[in-house]
Picture 1 (spheres, rainbow, N blue to C red):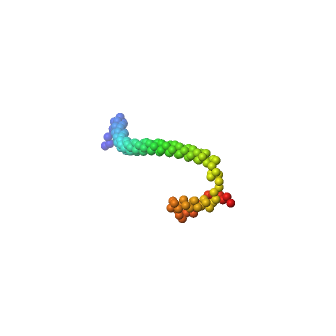
Picture 2 (cartoon, helix red, strand yellow):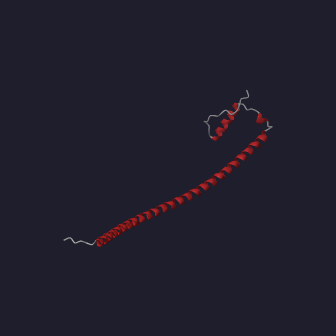
Picture 3 (tube, rainbow, N blue to C red):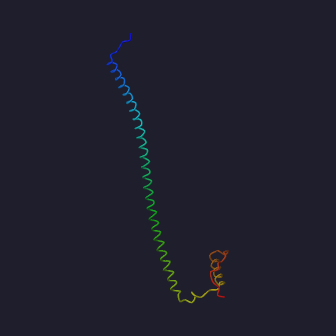
Length: 138
């Protein structure tokens, strides 16, 4: 009752079945690769957007640092000019007072304390303790 199939037909049918199974596997793999490709494309867009935002932030930071460097450079120039002016004024004062008798005479500490108290009182610091900046000539 079993019918014998010729060997050639069995091989042909087996080959057709194998080709159909391989085709189904390829279709399944292609579908999976398409889904993976879609997810990866979305991730690429996300990373690109983040990269653009980071680049914008870095550009802003560089601009702010450049502006701060300009401010620091201007402040350094201003301070150097002020220091030079202060040194010139000190030299002028030293030169003007070089031979002045008052510049080389020592003032008694009581006199310095009295003058300091008067200055503090005029400034409104009546309760401040004066410091002894003069040397006694006793």
